[in-house]
Length: 95
Image 1 (cartoon, helix red, strand yellow):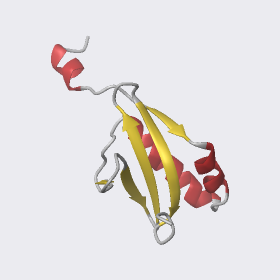
Image 2 (tube, one colour):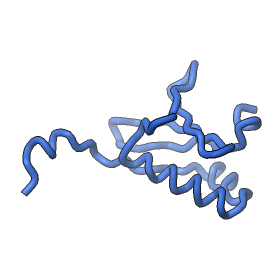
Image 3 (cartoon, rainbow, N blue to C red):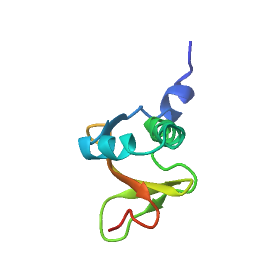
């Protein structure tokens, strides 16, 4: 039986919501890169701010670098949802 300390320290898992536009962006990438990005996004369920993530200036979004690609996402603590807004190559993601 887990102790109260374990229950207090554990954060609830979030649901990852990938927008249709992001799914389209993923489908255009090579399979190896798309799989790597998907795996990294799934890790956000347990850790919203993994090492290397950065808060975006001027908006309530975060970014995480995955090789030469960036994923920009927002999260809603009230609904336990992570919304992936866009994915793209580092030089093109902000255009």
